[in-house]
Figure 1 (cartoon, rainbow, N blue to C red):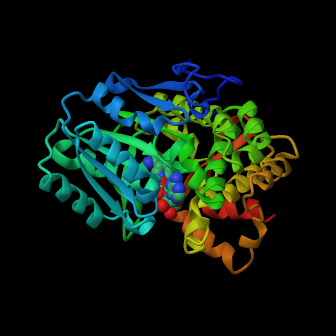
Figure 2: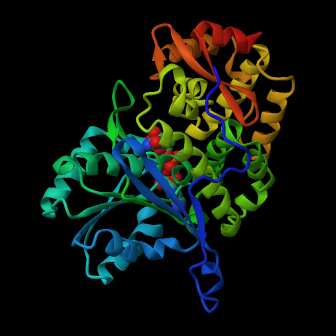
Figure 3: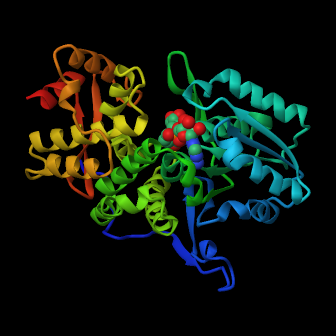
Length: 398
Ligand SMILES: NC(=O)c1ccc[n+]([C@@H]2O[C@H](COP(=O)([O-])OP(=O)(O)OC[C@H]3O[C@@H](n4cnc5c(N)ncnc54)[C@H](O)[C@@H]3O)[C@@H](O)[C@H]2O)c1
């Protein structure tokens, strides 16, 4: 069954605003790309703003969108707080807002119910009301944790996402999914809490390590493979520019990825479309990817595991005869260019393959014994297969 596909080059809900007068410094001369992400069932939409130097606009945007807010909880991690968070907190204080700044220890190990309660207690101690706002400044871990705390405190106060990793900019900050991990599994305690707005500033990526940048590129390539060949090609063609942190090039690539993801999310905001269709298409590369992440004991970063999962999806698509020959080679070449791992076979030996099969059984998106596996008909068009974990492994190993 075919999943949604998007016409080449489609840029839904995207407008480009040339806001800066010519006298502004060069890095602010780029236009701001504005996307309106609709949540039809809630009859609302929220803006995603992408632009170089946009972090500086946080105080103005808060005053504009939350004029009654007097307090801000700025949540970050101990890598990002000194690099970006402190400056943003000071700018908010300068505008007369009362700021509680809190840095968690960086990394997935902080995405716990304990840290969630710690944040909620912070809001209580700072005498937060429902008019006040939470700002997440960091990668997906910070966004998910702060978003979950904002969703639950007093039954929900606004969350503003200021993602600083590429993965969070193109994926985690958009879509409204927030969660923390339980000992029994990742993202098991969570909800939907749509952000009040998302502020994406590619300048933040100047301090992001290359390995993390590549992880974000894996998700961007995924958006292209699913919905737009033009975007997939553009991401690969721009790889050197991206690793050079060229903010101008990044603005358009990030905005296109966000538009492609949000177009899919808007049609199925709570992932309720049956049969692996709708939002579940975004799971391309993630079924095998999650299994590899866990079998590697999280030595593979999420984006690296997704890269190998994309190779797997291309291989399954070819071996099921869904697409013409050469798709796997094409995906491998793209991932190499993006400095991502591609050697899937090293994970499929006699020792590891059974472990991966067992990990596939634990995949959160399963139905009993069969998985909705997202495959590709061609670059830019996906389809859904129903396969057992054993069938997936057999297809990958033949
Ligand atoms: N909610 C969603 O829809 C969604 C989607 C995808 C992923 N996620 C979640 O996101 C998380 C992964 O996100 P991530 O890859 O951003 O991980 P992360 O938050 O751990 O960030 C990766 C690393 O980069 C550092 N970092 C971030 N921005 C930086 C910057 N500008 N400069 C220097 N260092 C910086 C962080 O401190 C961290 O060490 C996972 O928990 C995943 O479950 C959520």
